[in-house]
Length: 484
Ligand code: FAD
Ligand code: SF4
Ligand code: SF4
Image 1: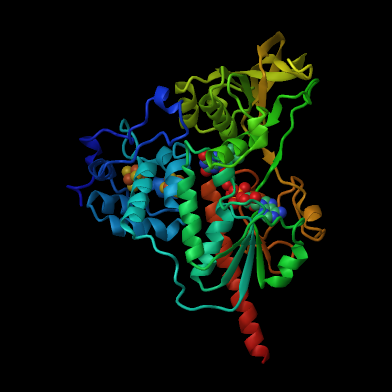
Image 2 (image 1 turned 45 degrees about the vertical axis):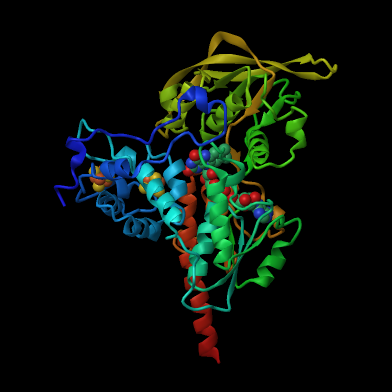
């Protein structure tokens, strides 16, 4: 083993080639190229096969990273794929969009002075190769079961659970209010991070596995929650979080101030070939505009980079803390900087100034902001922020995008199930080991339980919830048999 692995002493870290910023600003294509086979094997061989692999400890799926790196280094890619797929339903997606700098790669302890193994890029390479070679097959359960499970939400949490339940032979129906499968993978995250064809490829495979999708079906509007409950032996709620956090201040209701997800969904739909009237009218199109995005997370980074690609005249990101305290992935901040986004650190909006547009309608013309400084750390260890007296300034803007995060919608009211317990933040409460809500046979997973989080955590929750649903349904079967 040692002669093939431990190559970090000889080989430098190499990430897959990144398209130059001038080129990638002009389209919505993914920015990283695929590894060439030799590069993937060589990079995988840099792993030192740690006895206690911290990369694995810090991967929410506890992926068996050292094993699939070793298999890749040895050219045994089909086996590498099997190991990668054993713990992760969508390795090619995580390989592309996990914030690896905070998870597996950020905890790679290769040795001081050497850069981490490029785990995410190898994971993506293994799975993309597996698809190309036809190794990824629809699920064929060993035995079919009559019991059915209804899943509300076709995001990564719901989809991971659907696959795991189908694998065990259950009849699975996934309901989603959207016309496409994927949740935020399809309508939130932009194409330059995750090509939509990757998500659609998974959708097709899941249909071929016998999972039934009922799209354009909003539970609580097109179909009642009680009806879903009545049709299935168990139900999983995986509806994500979508209520945008609001900004206050005078002028906040002006035309030209839009929520981040409206902007991103429109851009994604246009990319998928849909007609989007709000884009065509210019309301959600950044072309030729001075764009100001407010926020510092992944959503804000996706907005600034989408605006650049739409041909904005300028793109600024206003964030009230500094770069070191940004919640978004540093890799994405770096990509945004390369693409020409200007970050206005330590600044917060106070008011929005309007002016009459050519049509006589008042629109936003500038953001009134105030400079902030970082104070003492609060109970969570995070430094507080305070406005600087007389630190006011204006930033010209004719499109302002609000990207301050998301909270859950009022699920008990929307589902007309007031006995569904939620936390004071509105997230659905579950038993930590059972994933069951306060309602018997109703489970929940993903962002609707955690609050806005990550794709990899939604997959993990979906898998764990599926395991618990299986246990619950087996128990019901056993009780029924005993009663006969
Ligand atoms: P979602 O993906 O939100 O899916 C929920 C689904 O439920 C949706 O399809 C919705 O239409 C459906 N639904 C909701 N209510 C109903 C109803 N009543 N009836 C029927 N269907 C319903 N994470 C990363 O790891 N990396 C990233 O780079 C990243 N970038 C992001 C960028 C943006 C712009 C955003 C907003 C999030 C990003 N995230 C990222 C976070 C990640 O997308 C989420 O954590 C993840 O998608 C949560 O999965 P989920 O299955 O819980 O919910
Ligand atoms: Fe790293 Fe995410 Fe893959 Fe885990 S799933 S190994 S955290 S890229
Ligand atoms: Fe390999 Fe780094 Fe994981 Fe160690 S921490 S097993 S060197 S990838």
